[in-house]
Image (cartoon, rainbow, N blue to C red; front, side, top):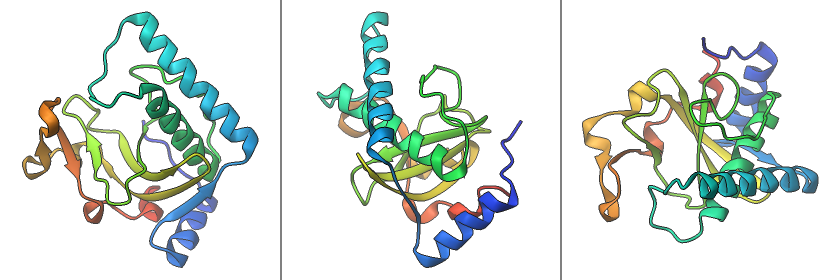
Length: 173
């Protein structure tokens, strides 16, 4: 069942989206500490479970921290609860929001074939304290052949360009 945002949430995103191309959120130092702790816990759990990464970057801790902080920023913006556990098979935020994050301003939103078709994927740029919500798309709409790539001999994924994403204010529709 999809998370339905109330009119105040949609209005807030619409207003922020009109003043800039994307919505922006800043975390407090306390929120940064909470998100960073959640990211470290996730990485330790991966190590304990012997799980490997899809990515060839050396700093899994930083990637997990960045992901947790972006999820927290999104939950804060929409007034949704964020548990921070990063449970496999559960949505990152709410009932069906999956968060993808990058420090690279030109980054595509990465979605894998096994990701939920019904989930709403959100691309968030930034890190540490300041985050920019670029746009979103349903999982099923992300899986287009022209976006399928296999960079650096890693697992294939769909790289959704930013200009193909839906505006944030439409996320409640």
